[in-house]
Image (cartoon, rainbow, N blue to C red; front, top):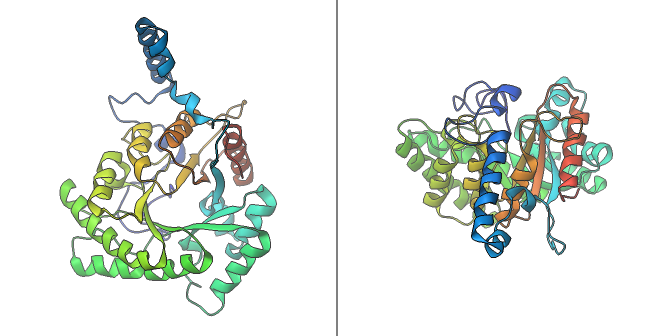
Amino acid sequence: MDHDRIDHPHAGSGMMAPRDAGASAAVDAPGHASGDGVSRRSVLGAGVAMAALGGAALGAWQDPADAAKPTAVDAKPLRISLAQWSLHKSLFAGAVKPLDFPAVAARDFGILGVEYVNSFYKDVVGTAGFADDLKRRCGDAGVTSVLIMCDGEGALGDPDDAKRAKAVDNHRKWLDLAKHLGCHSIRVNAQSSGERAEQARLSADGLRRLAELAKPLALNVIVENHGGLSSHGDWLAVVMKAVGMDNCGTLPDFGNFYEYDRYQGVKDLMPFAKAVSAKSYDFDAEGSETKIDYPRMLGLVRAAGYSGWVGIEYEGGRLSEPDGIKATRELLARLGCRA
């Protein structure tokens, strides 16, 4: 999820700088080889080196892009879900009603897994009949509720212990809704302040407390790279290890790394992934994403042994929201994912 700011009304405060979908997606860390030209040279160089070692060594080497497509015996193919944020303009404008989201996903896009954004339900969560109504609509549409993205509920790594505890407690209502709808997770933010190591300690503490609440509900608490230090894959991996709970993991987003190399970031976070966000911005005439190397990304996802949902999160400006969602779905389908 790549919202304008974490302190937008739909998000928590002060975690990240303003985001421009086009500009932010193009930023990579100095010294990291994330551009297409560099990666191709790396592949060619690796191919030459392997050839020098002989046929056996060459046979052991695989272009990362080749791993994007499933094998012939892919028992658990990646499934395509739709992140509600892909329709945020339509939702904020009132053209799509939040309660209609499951039906829209199935009817308009042929997608049967949905990822909610809590911003669109804050006024109704906990009210009589709301959860039952949304669950009924999912059933009518044949849609699976995958997860709820939660923003604006306080910093789980707040240096103030009382505020950190309050942030944990604020997420209870979303855990309850996720359980009722049949989701497997809520997505939260590892938001903190202070020195790097201290932020890791504080965030791990808040996440552990929340994961302990989620455990009896058979729910996961998953963290997206969503600004601040959470957009540094190495830092968030350290936090996951510090939490040390099997129901606390990550949601790697292809686009939200900014100064950190996006491909390294996904590689860092995939060992802990319980969901994946397929961010997209724009497409060329052949239907390839212009800012993110999707074959390479899907190769990293599959190489980690992941076999869950891959959520479309279109954030482009040139194509309409429906056209951007369809273009992303078609690209994922060509790479072996299924709706």
